[in-house]
Length: 379
Image (cartoon, rainbow, N blue to C red; front, side):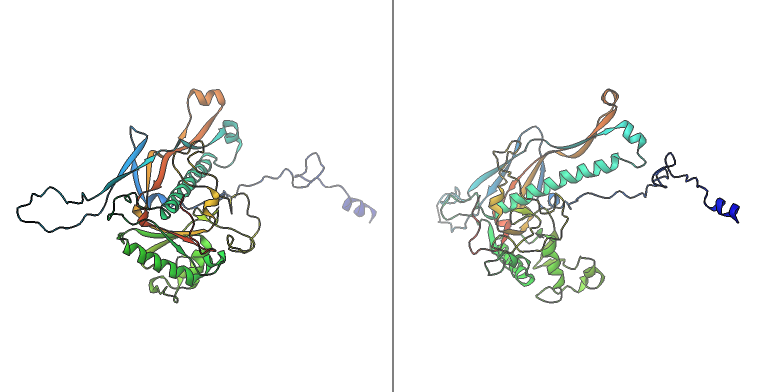
């Protein structure tokens, strides 16, 4: 019996320990699950919703506006040399390319050799996301600016073209109106009517809201004028229940100006805060404040406004003529090679983009605002 007891108390050799001490699983292999968890990712949608032109051999692109003219009765014997009022009026808008926008990362060759997962593809995706996010943000800010502007054709008496539109969501002095489904629906119908009245084509009309606004609308499908029999059941539950309101196709984005931030704002309700409870652990990118993007900022050659100018903005409705995008260099990824790779024993992955955006036809832009009865001031 004594011999048996001594055998049961003998020390075990734990194959996972380092030098027979510490955690018994230290030396066991960590298996790669095959999953790469994505960072904060925005859906880039704006590029295909506005007028996009490619620029070559120049720094800016000119857009021409031609205004209305009138019909006249001919006087017998009178020469026809154009209307007596000199119509139609003509004006121009110039969009300049901003400086080169880049996002890059250095990949050390030894790290790639030792890593048991693929680095370059994932880094390239993140670089692409960064460029796409910036692209959307600048376009949406340009459209907001257009919604507050008069037409460039505004100096000839009797031939002033319509300008942008601003529509209040709700009737309370609270930013929380931005999340009231019935108020949003009414705003969409008001916007559609305003666009019709200003002669804006019904083709290519879209609305962009933040995710919480979008999901508030989904919950109201089947009521408040949001009957959409094609989007019930599975489509509704998957978050795609709203296709359009008043002929305006709806998108959701975290890149629209929303009470001086991008996409959302948490905190106590007020005239400039919708009062949504912070879900917590947001990291550095959720509820990100708008950066200054005025023409006096290095690298910016167009006017995109500043943070304080979007204090009550809460959504956009527009037609594709609302804004123009000029691209000198489209979104692309470059990777070093050859002698550079040898010298640094690694490669730089670089994403680059050269573009500029500005509003074109203000009449095609509608800004939604809440929390104040006063329309936000023009830029």
